[in-house]
Image (tube, rainbow, N blue to C red; front, side, top):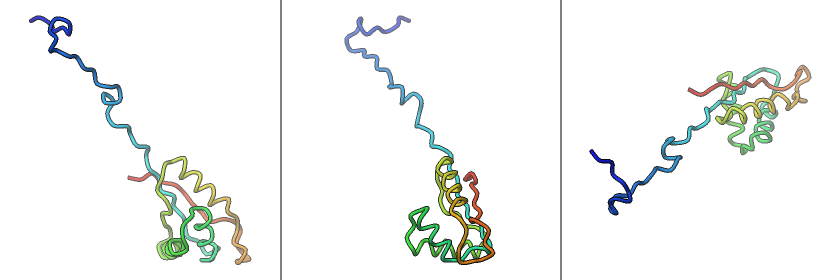
Length: 116
């Protein structure tokens, strides 16, 4: 069998796929949950204010998350990339103590966990 040549037959056109098509779809970064843990050393007001300030949540969503963490022991605040999740966890840890409770020693506990 004779190989087809673009110059031998004017109707034959060789088209190469662009590099991006050969590699397939770009892969998404793994997702991580930012988990807020319940305790008895922080008031609802503290939790709501923290969620509003750090996550930009409206009052209603902040209140609902405060209720969820109180009822369930933990709540997922955000699902995002690892780098962003680590930043939000660190911001929660750095937020400071609840001035409304004398025995409060510091910020709330938070962790990140891989989704799936």
